[in-house]
Length: 369
Image (cartoon, rainbow, N blue to C red; front, side, top):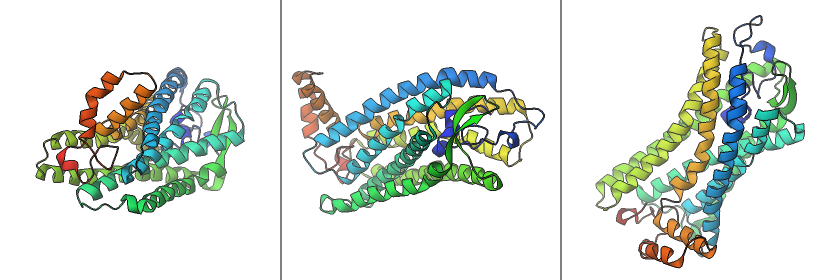
């Protein structure tokens, strides 16, 4: 298969002939005597992905940087959702900061050291996991405060939410141990370039590849999607029973949150599922199909990374209070006039909520989102 950045990133793993598989002789597309030609897909990936990753890096840094700046300027202690939102923005920033390295790899191969391969690869994996898990934490916090009307993370219990955040980061670090152990800069004789690769022990290589691939498909997509879907379905049902005049707007935002995650990551995981079936020998060897999967993987990987840019829009800028504080920050920086900000001050002051995110805490029914 073609070397794509999706193969490298442990969270998106395609443990096939790519970054995470250096044993090319045992994982060929069609047979040991007839290796599929992937030159066309390689050329497409080498020209498309570096430019796309550069754009994602810039947009991700700007959007998530604004989220962090606004949250840090708050004079009040951050509510539960805001703490999770802050950590989500940090994870997304650290994640997109690794994209320039993968852009270089797509264009010229891995020109850095094995040590940097492990550091950058591990950092990507940690922050990818954190980004997904903090989305789930936000969903759970919304569920508790809207459906259950339980303020689990009140300001008086700020240590609880911070402990939760620390636990999430610790779990992400533990899940990344295989990357720090097995990542290495290796020369791929078939691709004729050096890549940042997971080099598994020969005796257990197949078990590692299939096991980690299945774990990533289930643990970083299907289970988080199920959890978010469950929480937001109950939130929508609760809003439908309420008499808040903005409930339908709130429902649109909720559906956008789940829909963005689903649409951005579903194509990638479908491709990876097909690759897993292929690796298990459940599909007939077909070079034409393999070439289509490679091309689909390049596009699906890029779409998945685009989700890092959507998080600030979906989890922050939809909030009236957040938009007001964002405009105040732009005013202090001289980007907008006082008169422009004043138009929103009345709306912002009318939405005094504990959460800067979307004003959807216990007062959701009266406004929110």
